[in-house]
Length: 576
Ligand code: LR7
Ligand code: MN
Image 1: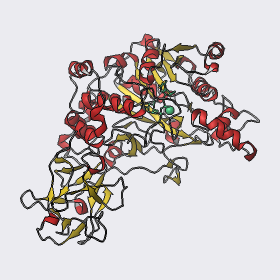
Image 2: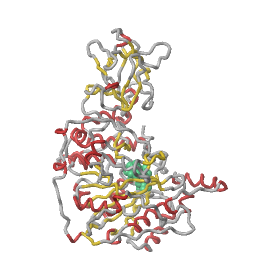
Image 3: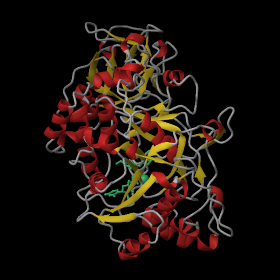
Image 4: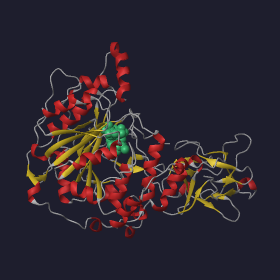
């Protein structure tokens, strides 16, 4: 249940070599199509409501700056200009051995210069943008546990090389109890030689990335905090647009576009600028295609700041005072996961703005697996963190999480009273407000009649997605009372949905498929009759029927006969 995003964080798999029209630089990776949940316009918060706070920074915290010089290719080195590194077959064994250390091609990384050059990946419209001559300086906080030397220092060097001198105050490295020698004294001595003040802090014991970031943030002396993962590369002009946006409104939390540094070849691959952050019922962060609504709000300008429902979590800038005003992080979260959604919900619900700034690009090494240990167990930690998000921020929509991931009910969430008090103190809005105004395209339905399993009266079996994907048939099997694949929401829009898929049929005898919800009724509209207990497909007038002997796992769509084989019970009786 957590594996899809864990460690690899929903790695955008092999980017389709499919340039967007009018731009040959950007690639589109396979995206989840968002379904459309259009709201009447008057139910939405207007721009002016969202931005009713302007703040001018005191001039004393602003600095005059000049663009950083362009980083030139290092001659004789591989990987320059962000190109892929290919390992000769004679070294394949070594490569595989080294891969295990960090779950990326360490041999390739070690061959590339710490100062490698990259392409200028920005849209043309970004290169000519003019930013205020006075901007606040940022401190960069990078937390790491057992990070590789070359990826860590390439992150540091890429920031130094590509940040305007007066805008980078310092770099704070937080070692979260790493167990590798080179990250000890050797690292401390190395950072002393850097042209930007750089410090190494150490947690006393493994504290996880959330508490490690809090430790780093405490030492920040710049006006803005910029967090980066320890395996990133900043590109030309990455910093100015982030800081410029914060100066316009200090309650804006800004993220760059996160490009892909291949874990296999370290090739720098531009990500789509048509992507924003969402989440599913399991509370995994996911990339989705930006809604038409948001494209329209930006009047089709691909260089304009993009309001995103959630952020990936690792790369963002925030005004330092605002970071604390809005409640920094939940210290009750361990190791990895959850803090990104927590901060996203909190920022939006408590009056801030969360944006992706398309003119700022930073690469990140996406991995398939997490390379380090999760003391206490991966699932326990990840479920614990996500449950805290659900308990504090999601109101009744937390039910979607718990029914999708029933195991989370047995994990202690710990004390969330101080986080709830924070929500009170800041007078934050409800999760309903968030869904209505910020994320109407979310796959969590706004209004629904029912959430639970759907049981056939005759066979006593339950509808089951069988974990299948969009386009595949709906399944059916014995009821396990364990939620997950057997949880469906019956929404006021007449959808029967599980996470982002809806029951869908396009002919009167089926089959009934799971198809990405489109929110436009059509083949996805069903009427449940509480009296005769039928589930009728609106477009065809046929009824959902239990499977026959030819395939006992395949529910059917047949002319209605009002027999028990077509009667369904929607009543929650999960035994937790
Ligand atoms: O116990 C730990 N202590 C640490 O210091 C565990 C991790 N860390 C460090 C780690 O070394 C790394 O520098 O924390 C940083 C993030 O950990 P990763 O790289 O294993 O995380 P990720 O890239 O797989 O996960 C994404 O989601 C995380 C949820 O907790 C964090 O928010 C990460 O910062 C975030 N990364 C990004 O947003 C980059 C884009 C990936 C995506 C989507
Ligand atoms: Mn990472």
